[in-house]
Image (cartoon, rainbow, N blue to C red; front, side, top):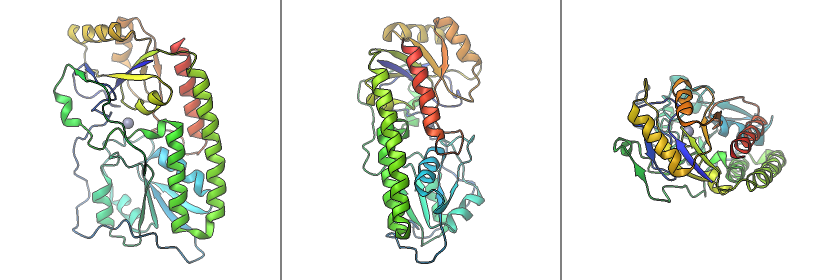
Length: 333
Ligand SMILES: [Zn+2]
């Protein structure tokens, strides 16, 4: 299976087809690293060697964005207070921290992040929060990120500046890696808050079991349609693709306003080259140009959810992923 993976949530810059295999673009713009908040020089607050909490109060856990919130909430249940820094509906890749974020981190016991360079806003924000009690949990600890694993074909040189040095961060979209993230979160929470060890273990076990079921469903369904080919516009699916033996081979970018004949021709050539079967957009994206492109390409436009935004119920992960599986199945037929 081949996925032509796409770029960005926002149909950013022009440059129609950047053919990347497990890509350097990583679906994220590195745009600017300036935060709205001012940096204060202070020692890093994290890695405070998991000071166990003694009081009878619930610990305060701050998470970065939706999937990490879902996994953390699933493990913590009602045993801890869990909040989210990047409000669902807000773009995580280009997020700018707010003073409220700094306050939240300043008073938290634990900060849980996806890691792999996704949360670019975090480092300065944590510094500003100056919280020596803070323990940081990297949910992707031990996960080997994918960089490019195949040759890159590109029509643009511009993309290089968006390169992510830490690999593609979208590991939560692979149920098996999601299991690893839940495990990392569970172990991190137990280290900080051993009083609730049993609760964290039980909650994590229940969630992991559902992830295993989901994994089996993906395996069983997608093995029926090998060599399926897609285009997406957000490079979010290389882990999912690798897990289920489908290949993400390209990034397609759409210009902000209008497709030129050359853009369309590039897309058409790519579709032919990789025998693309479907075109995937994502929720919340203005699909006008994609729709017109899909007509030109004679392909159906469907929606895949990267879960960067959505509902805050931990079960939402399964709901969205099952919808993704159905979309893939239909597209691959
Ligand atoms: Zn993304």
